[in-house]
Image 1 (cartoon, protein in one colour):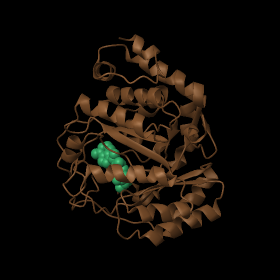
Image 2 (cartoon, helix red, strand yellow):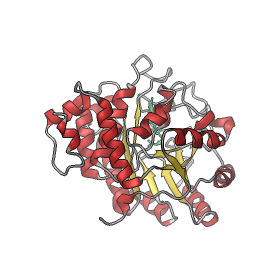
Image 3 (cartoon, helix red, strand yellow):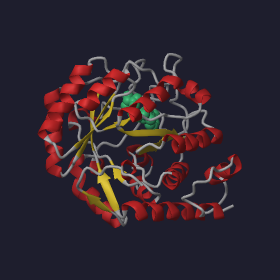
Length: 347
Ligand code: SAM
């Protein structure tokens, strides 16, 4: 069965048994990680792209059962950044070498179509050499179109789980799997470099669900895939659930690199949160993106999606020098540039 690893990248569909073995089988994971690293080097060399993450609002109208900023969490501290503050964050980030800004937030109704469009066009005007990524959840197609016309290049919307029954256990009935999927396909059709993704070890997740994730990714062909362990937040219904494991998360990162060799794969903050070397291990398992936090230090702690979320040290934009050093020590190199996905190029 381990010959399977050598057969990557393959165009062949894998059977349920083959996927099950790759995900949970008893074999030397290092072989899988090394293969993912080999494939990543073939396409992206040792380059690691950096994205400046600005968490623009912790208000959210949604009620995802796993998330610390869900609307039912009355203990969550809420904040929202003004356009001026967002612009100042980007200015600082530009100076530090960032050429992609990611505006992420809860689904905040204060963010009207026009407000976001103005924000995007102002950033694109000021930094024409930069990419702007939005991650503002599910919106009407018209909003996605208007923001794309305003200059937004990319959109991140994790699918969270590709299994409808699992999705329904993680979300209240008004947040539907069908709508999440519809949004993802719309984003891609409009022309965004689109990011999907999922949590590893989220409550009720079975191996079948992870197989569904792999098959969905292969079919959807996203430009980016965010994969991180589920980490409980103390003020959510999943407070007592165990966190996702490091090994399983690295396994899913590596398998994603093997089925989507050209995709952009972040070594996520959640991965860095569950293990001191999580970021480096992610890079060595096929990841090639890091998203340091550019939000103002005063509000970072309030974007509390899960407990102990990292937001200082190498995680923060000010920690760039030590991040560069750590990435070098791991055998890779941070590069300045937009870092578009090779999947946008023909061939
Ligand atoms: N509202 C936007 C959306 O829904 O895409 C963006 C913000 S949302 C908080 C960003 C991501 O955080 C989610 O897609 C989810 O995968 C992740 N997240 C939320 N709670 C988490 C938890 N407890 N553990 C790990 N990741 C979590």
